[in-house]
Image 1 (cartoon, rainbow, N blue to C red):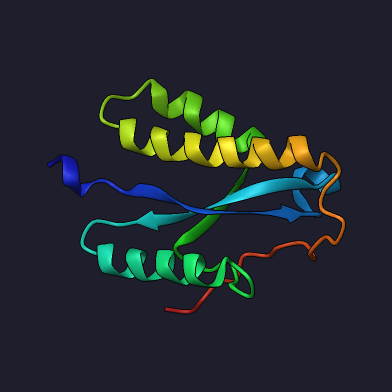
Image 2 (image 1 turned 45 degrees about the vertical axis):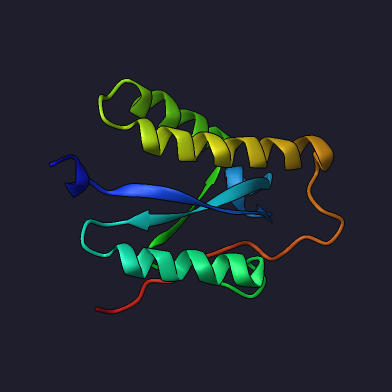
Amino acid sequence: MAQDKITMQFTDTAFWNAGAEDGRGAYQARFVVVHPGREQEAESLMKAFKSSNSKGVRIRDGVVALSEKHLNERIAQLSQLPGQEAVVAELNRGLEHVHKLAVAHPTGPAVATAPQVKVAHAQ
């Protein structure tokens, strides 16, 4: 079934990660990973990011951050695969957002946040 594959949804948020791109820093777009059967969990994460405008929300399981470089790589990979159109569209939304921020503030925001670290949770 086409519904049984993992997808991603853009959270409409991005941030400056000073530790990205080998310490050069880059804007990264946040995406919620949607697993089959766990759509409600993904929707809850999306609401958390949107309601707080991502302020104070940590990257955690189920959320990934991708820079422009990684977005371009994933779009190129997934564009070649049938059935990935929805994921490619979401990645393109994130890429557009990151690109707008990079053009407006090429060296990062005036007040940069600390490098983001993925927190692993024990199951």
